[in-house]
Every structure is written in structure tokens, then in C-alpha cells.
Length: 230
Image (cartoon, rainbow, N blue to C red):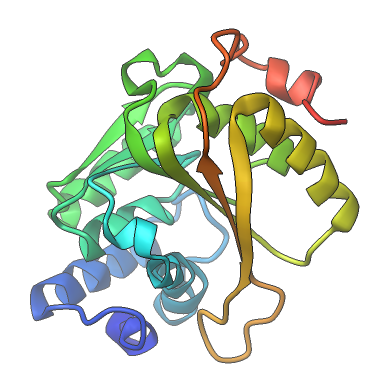
């Protein structure tokens, strides 16, 4: 299944962008060491690419000039968004060296020149502090942890988009308490259907309403060990 066939309703891709995404799928399928269990082109077109591009329903993402993808892993959503938004500068944040090396191979193979691989932990990316219009995260960590990773990297007025599955009211209450400590506010939880048959797919959208207190980010690993809002 060509990637444009699952994303055309969200954004009109040029033939060049379609070829880039097809190249992403080809590399993913061919590399047995790719850091994902879903490598087959047809399934990955839906599970990875369509699921990434569905966030383009959000105006804040379409207008973003600087985007950071936390825990980019196999390149989703960040690399797919970089292809779809060629005017945006996209940073693929990944802490594991092996995954960073894969991301760079994939980026080069698909000629995604507006993306760069940043091989560091989110808490230690000092060059990204307060600079990003949008931070995205997909299947990364509990939401309280994602909020703490993202808040210091966003400019005031910027947006966090967190991909989640089935909703959990208790977890969302904890996340809202954490958000308040970080200068973030939940804007919406949008149910999305990135491909036919998809269920329980949600985009959790937060806005950075005020400056994040200077005690954040806490040192690496603390957000997971002592999550805010619990």
C-alpha cells in the first residue's frame, strides 16, 4: 500500500513526498535491525506513517517552524512529519546510539534534509530549551513523564502533541496535575482514525501557557523515578 493512499485525506502530498515516504517504507522493510516490530511496507504505511500524519489535522502542527520528536525510535512521527512539512525544521531526539544510527541511515536514504538526529536524552538537550513550536511524542512514556520532557523544550504558546491509545481518566488527572506544575494546560483530547479499522487512537494536546519553572528539566531519569502529579 503506497503511503499517500492512507494519508491523502489529511494532507495532499507531492509526488516527491510520496517517493520519500515509499523510500522510508522500503528501508524499514529491508533492515532487519530496524527498531520496530512492524516493518512490512503495507502494515507500516498504516501503523507508522498514517498514524503519524493524522496529527496534521491540528493547525498548530501545520504552522510549526520548529518541531521536536521525543524518543524518535524508528522515525515516527518525526521523520514522516518532516517529509510532509518540508518548511519545518524537525529534530529527532533519541538517546540510544543504535537507534540514532538507524535514524540517520533512514533520513539520508529518504533525502529528508529538514530533519536532524539529536542523539541525547530529552532532559539533556540544552540547545533545544524554549525553542520549539511543537513537541511530539508517540508511545514514549507515561503522560506525566512526557509532559516533563516536553515542557522545557517548548516556547511559550507552543504545543505538545502526545499520541495515546485507550483513554484512562486516572492517568489523565495525574497528567493535568503535572501539567499545572510545568506551565502547561490541556487543550483537547482528539479521537482520530488514521486508517480504516483503527480504534482507540487519541491525540492529547497541551499548550505551554506560561514559562516552565527553572527547576525543570530535572536531571536525567528523575521524571520516570519520581513522576509529577502522582
